[in-house]
Image 1 (tube, rainbow, N blue to C red):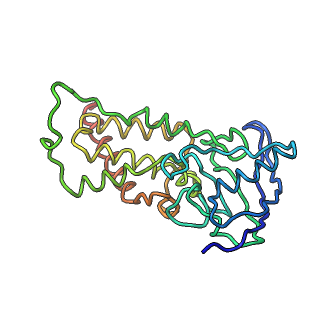
Image 2: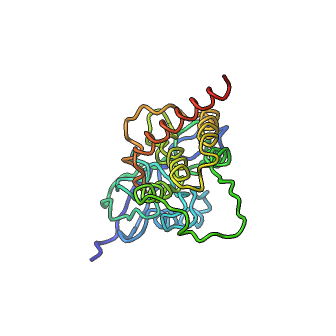
Image 3: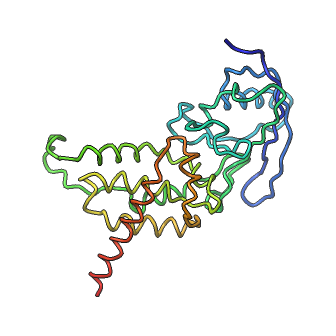
Length: 257
């Protein structure tokens, strides 16, 4: 059963680009159905703005199915809004009440410069992946996948780590803007699989180095990242990354001495 339509007040961050100062603008969202997603609500507001010859609100979106990670917004002080384990596109307006004021901001991190309004540039994540998130493999003749034995727990952990969509909610949730949950998910996904063994040590060293160069902060294990991750990526991945990193450093030092 759907309740009646809602009228809402939006306070939305408007910013022309990364070099200009931003500010909050107030918009009225009228006649919003509780069954709409948060992005559909924005579509309605933008249509209204365009009809009034006003500039629409810029926001990122692509799949609208919780898969791509593009729809990232900071809503009422929480990445992806008030519901756990959902992306912004999966958040429904029934999570709000008629007459509510909703504050919407972009991710705030030096490593995610604002492109416009709520859209940020997350190519820092792509560069971290490019630094080490690949597998060199001698393809030769195709082997049957079942020939490569993999322990069930490792397979499950790798699968769970692979669920990371790179949305950046972990960075947005972290008081230090750390990217450790993201990087650890990517490192874990490959470190746990037999195919990922050859570059295992270079990968973790290169990805962590790139993460630091991008200007992400340090991890102080507050756990806000795991709590706000739409895919519930586990903090265990960070512990695993720390182990991988220490062991890679030791090996490197042995080689160099």
